[in-house]
Image (cartoon, rainbow, N blue to C red):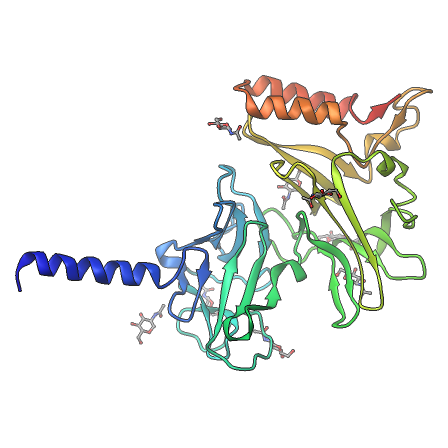
Length: 344
Ligand SMILES: *[C@@H]1O[C@H](CO)[C@@H](O)[C@H](O)[C@H]1NC(C)=O
Ligand SMILES: *[C@@H]1O[C@H](CO)[C@@H](O)[C@H](O)[C@H]1NC(C)=O
Ligand SMILES: *[C@@H]1O[C@H](CO)[C@@H](O)[C@H](O)[C@H]1NC(C)=O
Ligand SMILES: *[C@@H]1O[C@H](CO)[C@@H](O)[C@H](O)[C@H]1NC(C)=O
Ligand SMILES: *[C@@H]1O[C@H](CO)[C@@H](O)[C@H](O)[C@H]1NC(C)=O
Ligand SMILES: *[C@@H]1O[C@H](CO)[C@@H](O)[C@H](O)[C@H]1NC(C)=O
Ligand SMILES: *[C@@H]1O[C@H](CO)[C@@H](O)[C@H](O)[C@H]1NC(C)=O
Ligand SMILES: *[C@@H]1O[C@H](CO)[C@@H](O)[C@H](O)[C@H]1NC(C)=O
């Protein structure tokens, strides 16, 4: 065989193996291993899924984080209460077609999507630009069999729900990490109360520390400012099958997340590209709106939005120009201490 033939053969083998999976999926033939730092990345390079250690811990977890944000920010954790104590972890499609995480060559997984699947061998997992990890069955019209959005950890992203799937009994609630070093289920939770008049409730253990009030058809009664909502699309579903609330940003370029933090608050956190840092734009409870007279006698306080559309424009300006970190500091200061939550 001459060298040109050899080269063509090698190239062919390379391309065949390269195109047999795409970089955002885990298939029967393509798993990811911790010891080689493998990750999968969503099609638009928004989110990555791989192994990580939180804070100062050396334990290994499978998680999802923002791919392009330099401060590693984990939005979902698979094995949050079952860490792996070395780097032998491997995440693969198992014989039943589930996505499963194994320590080394052990036969029992430390975590699994754990659903019953008819027709094994035809499933694959995919990380999507929304941050959702989905298990898809190819020979079943690409049906989504399982999704990480159904099993939230501490972070509420656009299009994720808080509430209940009443058919399956799935309880989509947000629970804090135990600490920055331990993503295990902590004792702060953000959940939908499923009573006669559903509302959002933040619990410290079993003690409610904040309530949204009931749904009026447009907004939560405890958050009347939602009526002035120019920034967020909201969706409240109350049917026989589902009771849920979700929202998404009209400006899809905003990078925003809500986090139920182990300190006992749920915070809305926005990425400021100019300062390359996260900014807490509001939080419940203990929002500045809780302080009597915060906005003066003629002003009202907007704990829901936290930023007005003017502020959003300012944010946009900040993120699209090459401002210094100082401006970001100022924005944070004015957002937190005074201004944009007050309207006249
Ligand atoms: C690591 O985990 C494995 C499996 O759970 C266990 O057998 C082993 O003792 C652990 N090693 C250390 C150093 O804790
Ligand atoms: C798994 O088993 C194979 C073959 O038995 C071995 O070569 C490999 O080192 C093992 N991997 C781990 C992480 O134990
Ligand atoms: C899978 O589900 C079964 C039944 O609910 C449970 O007993 C088992 O522990 C689960 N396995 C994993 C790896 O989560
Ligand atoms: C849903 O889960 C949350 C968090 O674990 C919990 O506080 C709440 O009681 C659950 N709700 C129901 C109806 O089971
Ligand atoms: C929450 O957990 C922390 C530490 O795990 C504990 O100190 C605290 O008492 C708990 N709080 C409640 C309300 O259960
Ligand atoms: C938000 O709602 C508006 C108007 O209902 C709609 O045009 C837009 O597509 C929605 N945006 C997203 C991101 O869903
Ligand atoms: C919770 O908030 C504290 C203080 O702002 C922060 O240091 C910590 O990293 C947050 N925890 C998580 C899991 O983001
Ligand atoms: C974000 O900031 C970086 C530099 O800090 C810049 O290169 C990039 O173009 C900015 N992106 C956007 C969307 O403004």
